[in-house]
Image (cartoon, rainbow, N blue to C red; front, side, top):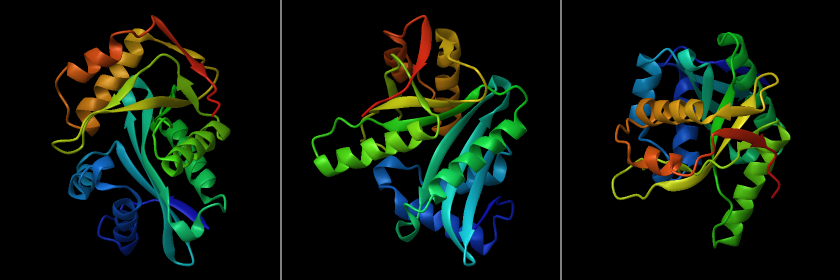
Length: 218
C-alpha cells in the first residue's frame, strides 16, 4: 500500500478521493464537496492524502494547517468499507500526523472534532465509541472541559456537541484558555466560514483557565 499527498486535482486519484468523501459521511455532517475541492485548489494550507492499494484509492484524509498557531486540524478521514480493520486507518492517520510535524516548526499538535457517544441509537453509539477508541489508541486525548460545538454545515441543522481531541506533538499536556479560543475561532472562520461569536461564546462560557489533556475511556 502507498500513502501520498495529491497535488494534481485533475487526476483520477483525486476524483476517487472525493467519491470516498461523498460516500463516507452523511450530508448533514459534511461541507458541500464543491467547497472542499475549491479550498484544496486555492489554499496551500489544506492537504489531501490518499491510501492507494491495487491502483485504487481506498482511504483519504484531509488536514488543514494553521501555521501561525502551530496547530493542525484533521478535517476528515475515511477508509472504504472493504478495506476497514486492516490497519489502513492507523497508517493513514500516522502519515497525516507525521506530515503535520514535518511541515510545522515546533508544532503543538493535530486537533480533531469527534462525535460524542451519548446518542439513543445503540448502533450509532457503538460506532462513535469505536471511533473514540481508535483515536485514543493512536495517542489522541480529549481537551477536558471543552464543550465544542460544531458549526452547522447546512441551513436548518443545529450545532452538534463534539469532543475536541488532540494528538500532541511532543510533551504538551495542557493549553491555555486563550490558546484554545484562538484555535476554535480559526477553525470556525477558515473551515466553516462561520464568523459570528454565538457558538464561540457558548463554548467558552464555562471553559477553565487551563485546559488539560485527558485519556478518554468509553
